[in-house]
Image (cartoon, rainbow, N blue to C red; front, top):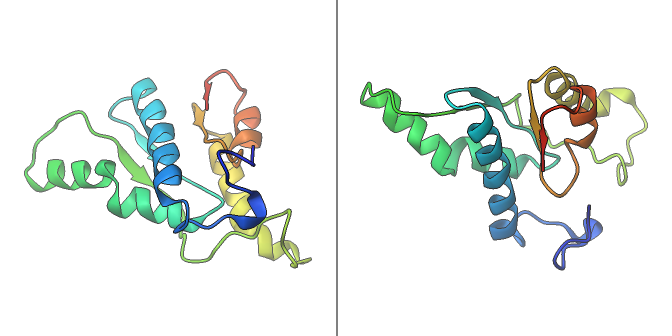
Length: 140
């Protein structure tokens, strides 16, 4: 949980800490891919820029595009996510009091909680989902 290596939760910014955040995100996907190769992996984060990075810029995204484009079948993982165009409300900081404002968070928890395994980073966004899925296959 924050603070981690100089990152304070209320001072968090994807652009400011991009190299650390993308490293943690890649590590979480690597863990899931090691446990379940050739899988479809649902990715989620409390920060939509992290999801965008994984789906659009990461080596996982490029490797999958190359494999399907050239009709090869290497060991690849397919990353999927809900519509991440709307930023998640942060429970700790949100001014929203309406339940609808947190629907993206509930969707993520529901989907991750039904997963075979939950790999989450240091921020702890997936921690409750790891408990919901039974906690038998949890990596951090």
